[in-house]
View 1 (cartoon, rainbow, N blue to C red):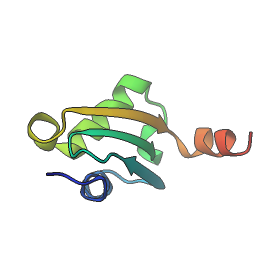
View 2: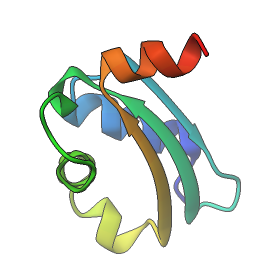
View 3: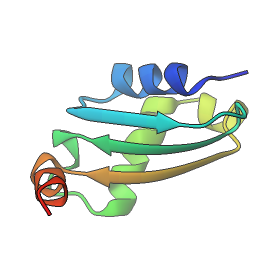
Length: 82
């Protein structure tokens, strides 16, 4: 069973990230907040595709659901300072 920590580590290994938080306690359903400079200039779908690419086969085999909130570093700074 996949843990939130393992999922976080997989994302960090496959994607340059400034900040990653992953929650989930049943091994299949997760929520993630991901901040990456690689998201700059990309729309939300393209950002999510980068995360899926980082997750590779885990997205098809081990993860049933992943709710993501993705941010560029600038957007993250603005959301934190509200």
